[in-house]
Image (cartoon, rainbow, N blue to C red):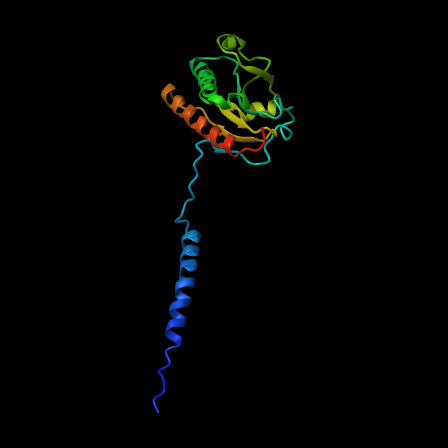
Length: 181
């Protein structure tokens, strides 16, 4: 009698390879750092435990997103450009302006004459937050007081304008995803 030919091992191996091979390849790609996830933010993300409470400072505007800037002792052209970018970035947010408060942090020796052409809310900075805001950095703060993203100083006015646009893009993404503030 003719018995049917048994090919049970070959389809089983092919089926196993179809399901297992992609997992093995993915594991290799991830372990060899060949894949770099798509980060769309342009600012530097800060550690999640950095907040007003850990810096022993009261939240100047609770329940609002904030962009904070420390006014230096002497406000030169770069400082004035930074203040201008802060103001224009707030205006560029359009209908989301009321959700964000640009805040200029002051120290006892800050150059208050620089604020004469601008209308910003101000708050007193302590030494811990002043250390984070060195070199004219801007920091985005969430409504719960966590410092989220940092934008360091850039070289010239054109680079500052580009950084301001990138900050607005990041703020819009944060506002879209936020359920608070």
